[in-house]
Image (spheres, rainbow, N blue to C red):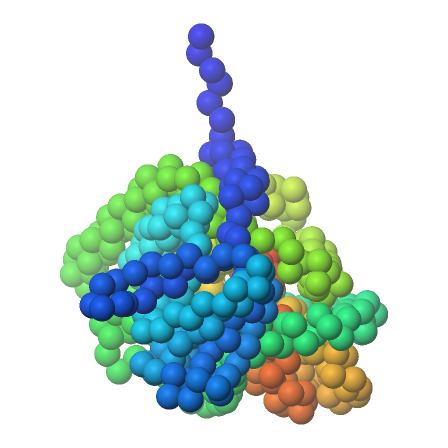
Length: 495
């Protein structure tokens, strides 16, 4: 009997649901730790279970407890040890539920007890790496072909101006939606004091590291740094803005030389683009397995317990992302195109699912380009310029989340934000979405900068770090959907 073939996007969606169920069933035990230590030159792995508290102690002064954690602070214990792992005199004292005590010294590592779900994560990581390594050669080849096919530089300038204008507008709208929802829902007023204390204790170490990584927005330096000193260095480091500049400039210059000299170069990059697209098709066959592994590992590692503690904050962010994705982007399409909204979302559904699974606009870029070009019929010369730029500087979902987060943290601390403060948040978030684009982990670092701009204690990010990974998955959908909507709008306006 011949069974009907299931479409790839349904396979991916099914893998996402099954991965979540699998991860929830094989979740990490939040009260168990694996401690690797040495004893008489032998490496020993000790499972620490059924404990009520763990204390870190300086062996040179056993009566002095550095810090004490209860069994609900597994993440905090691991982070604390990573910070002080180079101290050979560090030991832990364990109080068990049955009243017994034990001590472990010469500690090498402390980690969670893995499950079958978390052991699948390398499959997901491999899938992300396969997508990521395609992005740069695909962008370079597409941009060079697109720029070389433009009639004049004025056309590129017009496309660039439209792209920047729409990206800035959607980012400003997103941050405004976030601020309005946070003021209406007031999630910070609904968090209990004991929950606040537990979150601050669990993530205070990580928040301190993020604060140290503070950034400043300098638009002049940003514009200057778009021009690469060395294009090969830009390619090696993945600096997408510099890569876009080089590829567009290279492609434009092909129009100024003899056609017989330009044609072999264009032919080479055209063939390279076709090869990259075919590689994307093959890698997407692995997508259901990669998505299953990523979602299973994420759910197993983080669980759903922390969601209940920040349910109103999560609701405000998700509602804002839904409004941005389902209201603002369709409005842009209605204004600039004559396309059906349903066709747009059907066309980019594969990219949205991959974006949710990987939490990375850059890793999703090859899929976004394929969806926009093949399903929405946007020319390569448009998609190759607009989409890489969007993956770098257009962070609508991130900006919206920062608006909600800033007000949430202010409400928890009892700080009233004036209209001027909230306008400052809008301006800082819009500028930061451009000026800090090349920095890894930019979302949280941008948030630290925004909090400091309106004098909110940046240590407050410890309150939201626990659910950041989950919300990052959701806001990446908004990020790539905005990129695709702008690409379609630019394409149809050029026609």
